[in-house]
Image (cartoon, rainbow, N blue to C red; front, top):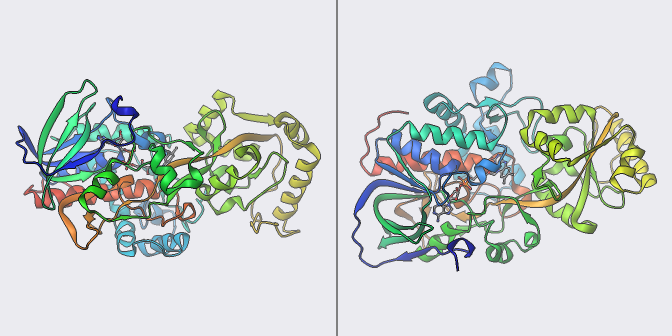
Length: 477
Ligand SMILES: Cc1cc2nc3c(=O)[nH]c(=O)nc-3n(C[C@H](O)[C@H](O)[C@H](O)COP(=O)(O)OP(=O)(O)OC[C@H]3O[C@@H](n4cnc5c(N)ncnc54)[C@H](O)[C@@H]3O)c2cc1C
């Protein structure tokens, strides 16, 4: 069986092994977490090797919108936006109903502004504060993004930054085996697509190889609700970190948590981002009926959309929202691909979409009345404060997708992997999708941006701690 068809070939060996080469810090995976970890460890003076299974590092990071939350930044203050790590932590606790590791979440909130400033100022990653809309669950505008708000820009900027450091990036090599002596990781073995194997020793190991979204067996086991859903994340994320962790006796937590999305253009595989809904758009099913409070969050909306006939819904919006969406490259892709329908009236749009016209018109009338404050929305959504939608109108047929998993290796606030029987491993770290997130055990705990928050900030913390303990001398950062 070719290696890439397997679910996970990750394993741990306790056999004695000689290594030809040795690095202070090895990082597995070159998405946002691995590259941030590599940058931080290199800043700390460590000899760093980042190992990536793909020839070109992309990861789920390059598929993402690339938005990273940061609380209490000078840019927010300059705009008069009141925010702080405590407010951000409060938002995380509210969204997850407190079902997170509060110490880790507090550390991430406290570090978030420094992470964005460090990436931008020390490593020239172009990040600016995104304005114009508020993501559900965030009480303040605190998202930072690249110029076109794409993860591919973020990933490319991080890779370029790593190339400016002495750190080495080894691509086209899948880490298969971790070598352990007691609780200590002493090295790894990589496998090339042609079967070539290389054994490399390390002083510390950082797992940045994301979650198990691409491992159908693990998704069926842990997130059965999404087993039939489209997986719209990186195909290389097969749960290797969890497999190594389980073999080593690490604590795995929140394995049922995930980031879904209730707005993936069906048949196109392009996300229609949630500002279109939060700013006044809404969703109907094949019968032309609404079925939920869409404003609660795009993650939990995935399962709600997939519970509708045909596992699809239509996102409805208007010209104002169409213009708002132009700031996202993903939306341009959707337009180019022909995923977006438009018509001058709701009746014409319903007809174009193949939906029952009369029912759609009734649904629209109810949304308009709720927007004017004349009636309460049946699903409890507050539509007031936004303009009534006005033509031309737009629709996209969408399905609910699994974007990435949120459970993983439990870590302490320095990103050290916790042991199931207490304490931490002395030289093993994890971040991003490889680690337990700050979203709790369900889809509804995911707060937009927290995937890249744990990727960049846990990556940074892991890199700094790994460099410090392997004797690196702080040279920058
Ligand atoms: C469409 C979409 C939109 C999103 N938008 C946002 C957003 O705006 N904001 C946000 O915060 N989050 C967002 N997310 C989530 C975010 O992308 C992830 O949380 C984040 O990218 C995870 O980063 P990572 O570095 O942990 O993983 P990845 O970026 O997936 O990188 C992991 C890397 O590890 C490599 N790898 C795996 N196994 C091995 C191995 N054994 N050996 C070597 N290499 C290995 C993989 O090939 C991959 O390159 C989005 C996700 C998707 C899919």
